[in-house]
Amino acid sequence: MSTVPATASVVIVGAGPAGLTAGIALSDAGVDVVLLDRLAEGANTSRAAVVHARTLEVLNDFGIAEELRDRGIVVPQFVLWDGNRALANVSFADLPTEFPYTLMIGQETTEAILLARLEKAGGRVLRPYEVTGVTQDATGATVDYTDANGNAGSIRADYVIGTDGMHSKVREAAGIGFTGSTYAESFVLADVHMAWPDPRTQVSLHLSPEGVTVVAPLPDTEGTRYRIVATVAEAPEHPNQADIQAILDARRPGAGARIQEVLWSSRFRVHHRVADHYRADRIFLAGDAAHVHSPAGGQGMNTGIQDAALLGTLLARVLTGDPASLLDTYETTRRPVALGVVSFTDRITRMATLRPLPARMVRNLLINTVTRIPAVRRGLAFRLAELANR
Image 1 (cartoon, rainbow, N blue to C red):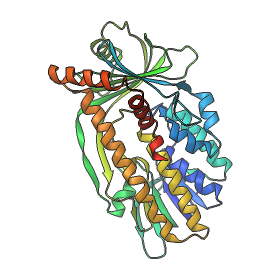
Image 2: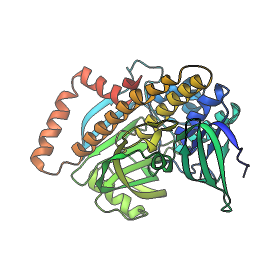
Image 3: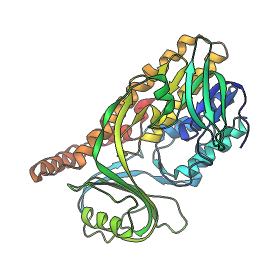
Image 4: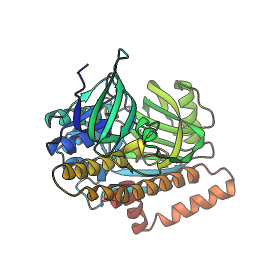
C-alpha cells in the first residue's frame, strides 16, 4: 500500500476502466494525477466484456487498441433471435471505421492493459483506500479517505473525478441527483464453457417472453468460453449450471446448447439512471457514477471510457493554460450521449421481453421486414458501435 501524497492536480476516485482512461489522458499531458481505489486489486473477472468500435478508436489514440484486439476475439456480426428463428443479422463489416467489429475481451484483461499504459505514462493507482468524503471551495477540493487499517487522511487537489460506480460517494458528496428507476427483473451474468451451435463470429440476442438473453463468445484456447447475460424474474444469487442450462433451453429451444462448466456467475439488479449533472464546480463524474443502464447492447463500459477520455483531455488542457470555461463542454457533450444510450438500451430490453403473443408477432414481423433494408441494418450497426458519439 503506497502512501497518498498531500496534494495532486487531479484525484480520480475509482480505478475501473473509466478512471484508468482519465488517468492516462491526464498523465500523458504531464498532469499530476492520483487514482484512489477501495479494492486491494483490480477486476479479476470478465464483467464488462464488450468493446465497441468507437471505444477502440478512442483507445487507439492511446496506442492500446492493437493489444486489445490481439488479446480479444473479433466478432463482426450481431444476430437477433426469437426462439430458434433468426430475425435479423446485423454486420459491422461495412462501418466507416478502422475497427469494423465488436471486440469481446474480459474486463480483467482490459483493465490490466489500461493499468500498464497508465503506469507507462507515469500515473499510479493507490489501493486500498476508501474515500469517505469530498469537499470543495473556491481554490480546490479535499478528498478524505481511510486506509486498510482504518487510518484517516486527506489529499488536496485542483479537481476531483468520480468514477466510483453506481453508488458513487463522489456524486453523493457533490449533491448531484441520479434520476431514473430500477428494472423489476434481476439479471444473470455468467461465463461458461459450453457447446453452442452458432459461429464464434457473432453475438446473439434472444427475444423471449421469459426475458432477454445475450450469448457472446469470449477468448480462450479451446473455443468453448461464452458470456451469458439474461433477465430472470427472480434469479438465485449465484446461478449454477442447471439454472443457466434451463435459461438456454427455454429461450433457444432445439439449439443443443450444453453447459460444460460455469466459470463464475452472479445476480444483479439493473437500473437506468443518469446523473442530473456531470459537474459540480471542481467535481466531475464519469462512467457508472454518471450513468447506468441495461446491459443490452454492451454499451456501459464503452460510454464510460469515452466520457473519461474526453474529460481527461479537457482537464489537461485547462491545467496547462486553456480557459476554465472549456470544462463546461464536458457535460453538454457527454450527458446527451448517456441519455441516448439509456433510452436505446431500455427500448431493446422492453422490446425483447414482450409477453403477449400478438405483440411479439408484430414485433418479429417488423424486425424481419425493416432489417432487410440495408440502410436500416447499417444504421443499427452504427448505433451499436457507438460511432454516432464521435
